[in-house]
Image (tube, rainbow, N blue to C red; front, side, top):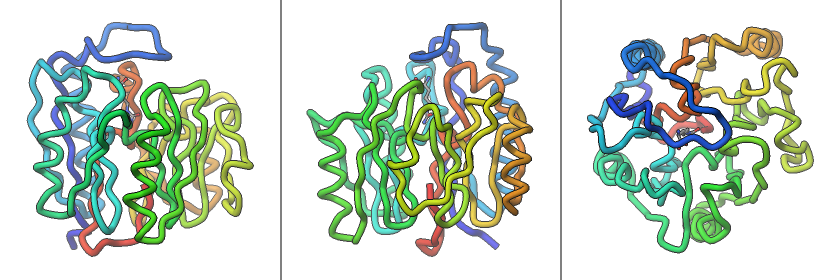
Length: 263
Ligand code: CIR
């Protein structure tokens, strides 16, 4: 049964020249990154998603992190204006790929936004104000989504690149977070599962309808998710992590029936 589409994008041969904010540059094995990326796509396929992989060139080192180019909700897709200028050329192909499935809207200047800063949890949309996403973009997204009943809340991002480095949705009303990077009072009414303190980068998980896709590098936090009754499927994302990417950033999930999956 096809649950929906997962848009992914090739690992650029120039991945090693990616943007970095909080990490020190270390050597990246691009072939290994490609193999890990293919395995990630395979997990999405096994979960019932039709994977549509976009091509990428050497002119877009970060394009594998396709999540940053758009925010997809049931009613429409917002094409972002990425905060890093080097990444703005990524959005055109993502807009083309999404256009058969969603009406498109756009973040306009002076707004800047990376999709990694937007966490959709039911009708709550949390927008991280970060080095990539500004209040002007948050205001535009509020205007676009409020008519559909979404509430937009701004959250200041500290200690990490994107809001979804610090917190993601793992079940209806349940968020996985690093308590050092986001405060509980930003998420009233939500149950919070904290990452294991030894695994600060473990708050990023892809929520599919029946399972969580999660980095193999964080077994203690994976155990916490399993103890919470969640089905966890692990992937090795170690090379992409060196480019400051995690698991949500490598796909844009478009549910077939406008389903109920947060992201
Ligand atoms: C960047 O700095 O833009 C990339 N090297 C990493 C982007 C990761 N994206 C995400 O977490 N949504």
